[in-house]
Length: 357
Length: 264
Image 1 (cartoon, rainbow over the protein chains, first blue to last red):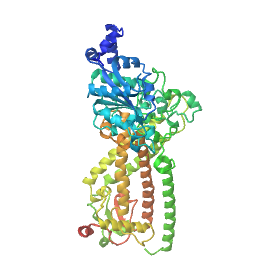
Image 2 (cartoon, rainbow over the protein chains, first blue to last red; image 1 turned 90 degrees about the vertical axis):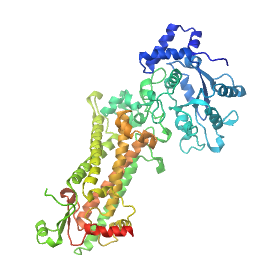
Image 3 (cartoon, one colour; image 1 turned 60 degrees about the vertical axis):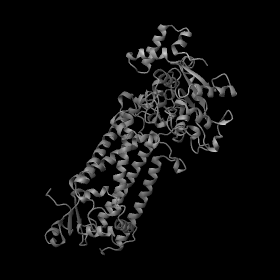
Image 4 (cartoon, each protein chain N blue to C red; image 1 turned 30 degrees about the vertical axis):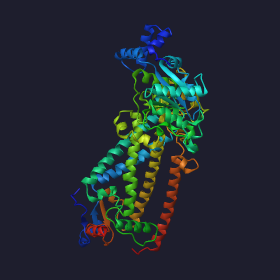
């Protein structure tokens, strides 16, 4: 691996004119919500900065994050992988395999100590000495700890790395653990979603490479530019919610008219993500647009916050699933019966002792 | 209203001949609940009712409205009423908290939980035994009996704080990042896990307060009939009247005795 080319050099090598390059920089500035005065900064950065090495590890996961990532349209994933970053290790995308592939990890870690970005897809299982996820003959936990040690920053791709996702749902037999609970001494950017939106993934990478800093994060460590609002806040069906027009069941008139899916369990009001604005597959659609409620896949522990088809979530501590209203009604009936009995006994007692007091 | 001294008997048993017959059946009357406490009680009761009904309807919306979305705003109105009542509830609670310092010692009772007071626990169990029909007669109290104070402290003092904090945390989601609701209460959401968890707990909180309301109303009506002191009218007039001459267990002159017991 010789000295890395700058973004500009790579783009020119691919036959992109300077004019197109400048246009690209202006577009990037607009996409990131920046003013025109910052365009020269982007140009300067792209002309002078070497491409940043990215090591992409895979733990306990289903590769849906990668599947989403390779479908990015703005920017095209081809541009991200071939021009912007130097994706030096990603065992599902790279050509090499086996010991040769693993050797690259050590090489990059040594050569770019403290200067590479670690992207993690999936999470490490901690029970059974980490034996539930083996990469190259060793537990993934060890690989993660080793590579994280000298990383500049860590991107937690998807709900697995960010929150645990399905493998961490109750009862979590392998003790699958989100990355930030294993690596505690590095800046971690959480990009939750199952999977995250492709444009959100490439957008986060573009921001980090262009400005050489991590994007502004919210309280839970998610980039504010994509996770500061709920699906509900920008949902195109929101007017039906405010009007009180709901789909009552999936085959009714309301469903055909595109009413709000709140009553059939849409988790849009409690889910922070960019689906209702960025949408999926080049902005074609998103779950609510296709007539199914949001399942809240970018929220912490969403697998245990079901049902996905009821507004109120089940409270699992009660053994058999019950929601807050069922518990409340049962308690109210219980207390009501006790009161009725108590009142009856009180009346009897009073009749017995009439005239005593 | 005529200026009444802090918890001083309006008419003592000695003055029976003058005060008691005029009022009818009581022997002694003590001014307990000052105007702000009574106003807060009824405003708060109304707010809790409105919040519970609208809150329930937010979680379980009414059947779908017919017509165009632009012609309807039912859910919007329900949520508006919920938020408006919530602000009244929260501001009222702050006012009530202020009055705990400014008002008489009965106004402080709601916020006190005398955990280390063995005498208080003894009277609490005595009151519980009376409710379980194991005691012939309950003690008389000018303020709340210990059992009532216990329930009041957990359901209303702690319960209100819980509902206000979780409520504003949920409100901050709509108000947006950087709003004062978000800056003051936004941290609550990751504390519970995620937004859905806060919704669930806020909902359970409503049921806890409603259970308290059920018991509270029953106990107040029952005490009014069966005990020897006024209950319901006291929250309207502010005056507690007693139907016999026995000294209330928490009357002024008994307080030094209690203090001595606490030291021992």
